[in-house]
Amino acid sequence: MTAVQNIVIERTYRATVQEIWDLWTTKDGFESWWGPEGFRVEVHELDARVGGALRYDMIASSPEAIEGMKRIGQPPVVKTHGKFSELKPRERLALTHVIDFFPGVTPYENTMVVELFPTGNSVRMAVTLSPMHDASFSQMQRDGLTSQLTKLDRRFAR
Image (cartoon, rainbow, N blue to C red; front, side, top):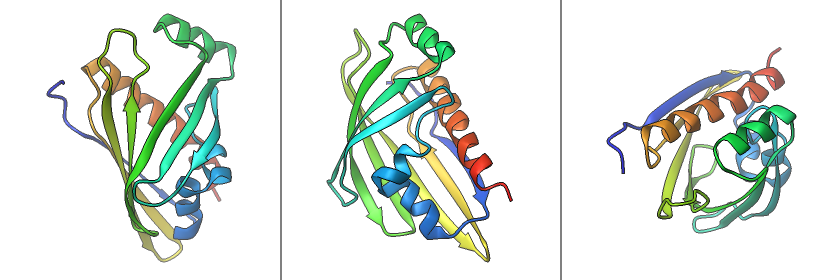
């Protein structure tokens, strides 16, 4: 593994903590925003409890995304799976994904921690990403999450 540091991305949304929580812990919520621009997901299983499964397909849905996946040697649909490894309702959750879809890379686990801090009529969300198998993929992970958060930025812009 690489010596890259954890990546922390924060956003503040004019929303209730329950609205933000549901985006991470319900099928409809997760499907409504997960995936960078040009991608969508189809959730097959989402069991929001410690040890509960998360299985979904990450689907390149725009010509640019499909071409980008080809450039990195990936098909347009990637089957993704993991579990909820921590859950404190409406406060904190951790998703541990199994990274087993890169040819030539030994499968490993990668954890994302989400913390919610409600204040007044807003919620600050801090997402901490653990490093991937090399710095370039960690940067792609950062860029991907930043891109998908723009979907929430638009949703909660009031």
